[in-house]
Image (tube, rainbow, N blue to C red; front, side, top):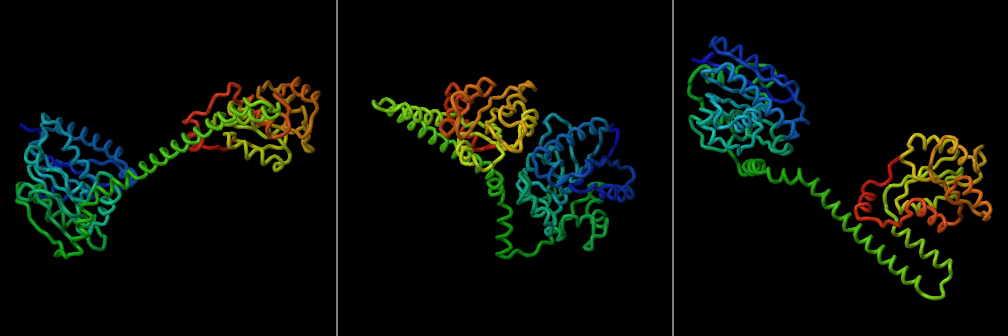
Length: 442
């Protein structure tokens, strides 16, 4: 013997707390007090959560677990389900996911404002899992248009009906109201009239389904609109996938561009090597060619560099050229600012480039080298100045500088010696990463 002769489970939709569920229970129990109602509630489910398939899937699994546990505990003689809007999604996909050996049989299933697709296949669920399905539709339901056009893997069966063989076991019924017309009148005031007339008799016993269809007679234009909306699913999938496809195309184009750039760099490197093998080239020309070759091979990974100078514009051209090799610059005017930035991001800063004289910096000159030595900070340092003597360069290196140079080629050569001493060539992945990510702020 069943523990409970007749159990009704209701499931509400999104952006609501399902007040209609309690109202349906009251008016039905007034006619048949031996019914037992259970209401599946899940709080306020936002439109954003509804759009994401994964969050819908989580709630489907939760409802399935609750339904299985309820049936196992109560062993109902008859089980009816009533769902509105997103509740129909939970019910439909839960029934679809039940194993053949699970003994869960639904007598009467009532849907209202369903967000399932019109093509949801019921033939293998009736009568194996459900004795009869009543799908109530509102032809003025604009909410379901958003479901059909914008939300992946959903539709508007609660507006246009399910595709299938209509009869005593499967019925689409049509009214002219909107998404909440089952529970309120045209002014928006709550009313139980629709539920009392069209749902309560079905839940009380085996009353035959009352058929009605209040749709307007189709015209050519109305028929075209219905056809477009009903067959929008392929276009919706294309629109949803288009950002991913565009991203893949963009990344592919970047890869092709990076590959072409790398091949051009390799050609220039080979050309420079051939030029260096010619007789009669001066040492300075060979040095220039060698620096150009190494610059072309430098990995274009993000390398963060502090440029310490009290005049931001005086070295703008050098910074602009070096950015093309993947260097990311932060300009500071005092030693104190540079040290503070290094201490804040000790693993991020790869190099400091500095002038020698700064009128507003009491620690100009060798002060930076003394300060980082005092704070036990290890970071490469290059003096970039207009003129210097060999003795001054030796003194700078003795105090801890990596180099003291003047001129763009010497600066590039010194940077390469510090950052890429092994002349590791740029990979395609590094070229793409640099293009995608660029330089972020310190």
